[in-house]
Amino acid sequence: MTDDIPLEADDLLISVYLDTSALLDMLATIEDGFTLVERVTSGQSSGLSSERSVAGEISSPGILNFFKVGLSGKLGRTKTEGANESSEAELTHTYGSLLNRLRRYLVADNLVDSGSPSTYEVGSFVEFTGVVRPNPFTASFQQLQRMLGFYEIVLGMDGKHPTGGTPKGGGSRAQRPSPGNAQQREMKAMTDFFEQLTRDVEREGTSTVVFEQGDGGYSAVLTLFDAFLRDRSMSELLNREFRVLGKVARHLPSGSPEGVDLLASSGIAGFPEGILERLTEAVRSMSGPGGARVAVPRASIDPPVIEIVPISIYL
Image 1 (tube, one colour):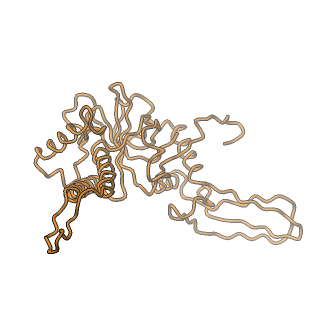
Image 2 (cartoon, one colour):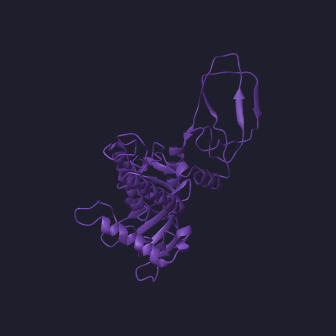
Image 3 (cartoon, one colour):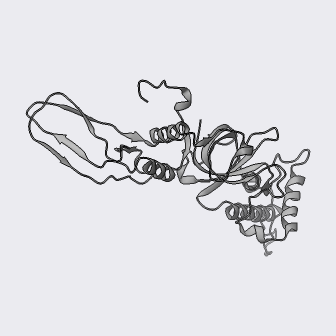
């Protein structure tokens, strides 16, 4: 920030998700490419001066978090050598500082739609605020999968069921599966089914989340790339209120005849509708009074809803 512009809390963002590829592409477009940052030199010197051009390079996301990049559009570096001593310092940027820079550009040029979500248009930049929820379809089955895992452990610790053996008086008898082993096999089969179900809906390396405004307001559906999450478990993200900066890819206002189908690209979407209904009903019956506390899975998000291609999620 320059000295003549006051610093505000809104200018300092803490990002929990940042698509660095999109960030660098947009900044390079705005600034006509990246340059190496010039060294800041103090002291006096005289002597030979030379200048050379260099190619700006951006390291791949996840390897380095600091860049010697300037955003002036000129590729070059100047170095002065002389007899007198001089001190040099290099300015660097982080992903966070570049995000702040991009957002300042967008806000200053009125490119971010700050009005009501009902006015959002496809292709516009928006900053949407809401409570982040996990995919309401897979979250239910993932919770059941974890619960069944604990149940399997309990069955494995139960030593009351005989597994067969040699009866008194000699002789032998065929081993019979115990009730405990049968239950374990059933639990294992259900766990494998839920795992395959969630893997089919949530593609590897991606996660779907929903931003909810509540009180009948808009929801926003986002697909996140796990590699760009600060915490891949999403424990710091889920069930908390954040802002997302991105572009609107779809807008379904109130009264739209359809919602956002969370199973559209999955294999289970091709199954008869009755199978999904039976799955939902099975979970609903399990979560009745005195049962497991599991949310009933939802396969779609009702309007009003928007779909956003996210650049960053932050506070």
